[in-house]
Length: 401
Image (tube, rainbow, N blue to C red; front, top):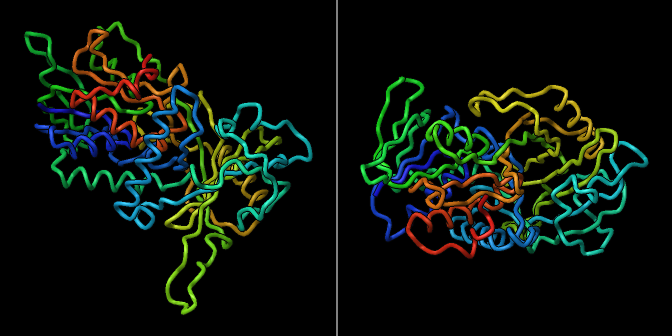
């Protein structure tokens, strides 16, 4: 049995990670990635905010499973030091940024934070790096929310996969599939886009986990298919910042040698009435950066390959203006970025075996929207179980299309 995963982002690497752990899986595993740069879209440029219970009923089981897996992975492999896994508070900054009065975009549904159950508690000291405008509404105390640096997490997962003899083909793109006389998948042909060399990989299970490019990949491999994957792209510009106010110096024990309890990170959701969007800002570890995003667009063009991204200067300037309002003037821009999240039409990710739709051996795993990092490990665990033939209906029953 040979499994080929198209897309080496966080969904693809999570799937390869859990499948390579399986004691029952036999055969080869291949990751195929089109971009010359690994983690060039959301897997390396998203915020990395995790939540356990911020989801609708259709996503509740996946959210709980994935959050618990994130926590377990971090505990097992020192995730705090290696990819910045940290508890995170979640707060809403009630007053609009950049205007004295304005619509509360959070409560109108423009931000994912509306899914959280608000505690009704106000006040509190809040993050030390935040130049506060008004009362903070506490949505989570950190017991069911956390943060990671997604690029570092992806690199850890990739390193683990390669150490278990998962084969990475990069940069390479799939160009065709072959089936046996009985109709079962038998091989997939990929093209090395640097050398222009074609290679046929044995393939009994094909997993489409190419993020916002998943529908395009499906059309390429199955041009006569009656299936149209309802996955579009949502771009998001972002800034990675450094502030002298984060992280705070760690508390120390009486002998001043060993740090005490680690500092929790923070997530702040607010509104920018002047800019017309809902900023999301996160202080995170292990590099001590602050991540600012929330400026999203469904029309900003999706590049042919993720590393060919073009950053919109006007979007970056708007984010910098918000950063001045929220942080003051003493921050440094570490990185400007843009990424594309895959969005499914129904608003829930597509985790589906296409056997029932006439495409035996093909599994789609894409369309996670803004929650791709949060729900990545659960998704990888579920898809690995599907390949192994385990019953995963508890999780995927509402996640089809």
